[in-house]
Image (cartoon, rainbow, N blue to C red):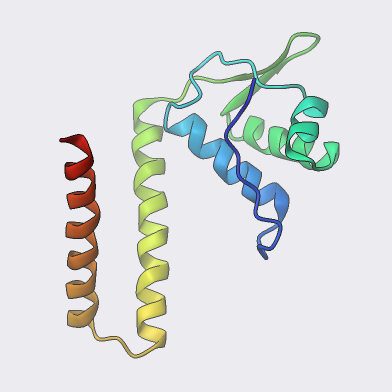
Length: 135
């Protein structure tokens, strides 16, 4: 099974974290449905051109969060994700991104009003683009 994970080798973010974050997003968003059999650790590492240890760590971390479950001799599967957990994850992901944007704005002395105006401009442009694509 091919899983759409994009690795940026030039990123300062550790490889395991890039994979874990994207795989978590795919699971929480429902793009990987409950019960989906994931590739074996060795197969996934080969697909991603990374270490087996890296993928093992990702699988163990996500299993610890309850997003994956492993059945000995069968494989690793996506666990059930409740609607509450899904909504909380979505909200937390956006909150973190917005906090980072505000921190960046403040670091370059961008005022609150300027930041709000820019945010509204970007939202209108991005959602306008989606509306145009849907027509």
